[in-house]
Amino acid sequence: MAASSVIAPPFRSASTPMHTASEKALRQSHGNIGQLSGLDQTIVAERVVTFLRRRHPHSTAKHVARDLDISRETVAKWIERGSAPNAEGILKLIAVYKTDLLITLLGGAEQWLAVAAWHERRARFEAEQAAFVAEMGPLLLGEDQP
Image 1 (cartoon, rainbow, N blue to C red):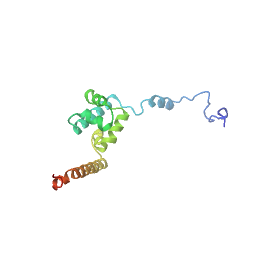
Image 2: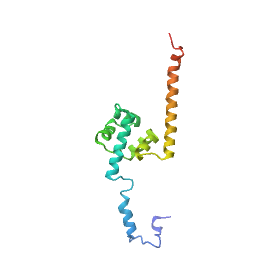
Image 3: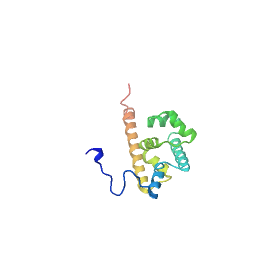
Image 4: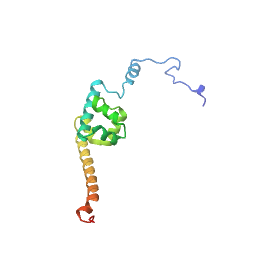
């Protein structure tokens, strides 16, 4: 079908746009979708920095940059200036730090989120334990002696 044969809906003329109050409000608010107010950005920034410093008390920017595969300067800006990460940064943080970060960002946990966080921590500890046993097992059993 050719572009010239496309027919506009009968309730709206293609040449004269309809301007209703709700349409104007939608257009005005559309630019703010997904954006946080200044206060919300400050709260998010504070909570992110608190979480990251608690997770990595030493060389925070270096460790977080490594975990997220982003520049250390970006992380340092979050920490030093208290600036909130952009949407991509928040998504990377959530992908890496999972429910522990979500609980911090939300300022608490719903029961389901607390349970999910517990399961994630348990799985992480079990993986760390298995890696430790794999590395240290032969030493503890005396199998690695010269």
